[in-house]
Length: 187
Image (cartoon, rainbow, N blue to C red; front, side, top):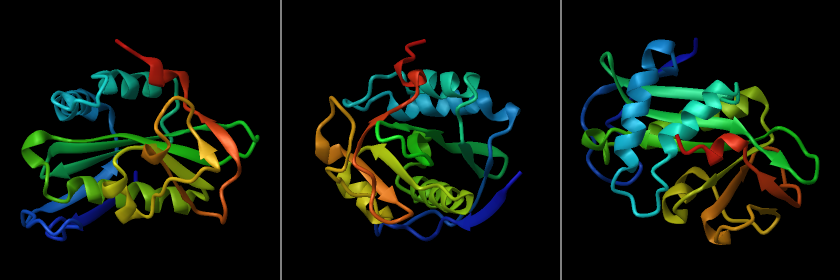
């Protein structure tokens, strides 16, 4: 099990963070219920959400497709989660991953926990030798981690500016990206 302790008093978005010790570690079986609850709550009031994110995480887990499943803990309480899974590129290139869903308990949002989960997931992917990472999300937020829209990699059916990549090994291949079928989970 990999662990890291990250002081969450550092905030990437200039908001004052709580002075807590934040531990980030691999998911354990005892975390699954909390991950489900946090993911559901984090997306409950988001207008862009399909409100199926907790089902996606469960389906990825059941299919054995979670490359990374990291939790953020404050003390013994799970307060955040990020899932990372392999994606398929039409070019045949391998080693690319999709980041998400990422969620933080609503009572702990705006305190740098999501940023800490992002940094931990990116570092772990780089250490694993991943070629790169893609995600679907708000460009202004994810740019701080190096993500950018690039016409080389396309996710059909979504606005190009929201589909972003972070290449760890030079220029990205030219390809369409496909997420695992678990992303179609509805229950």
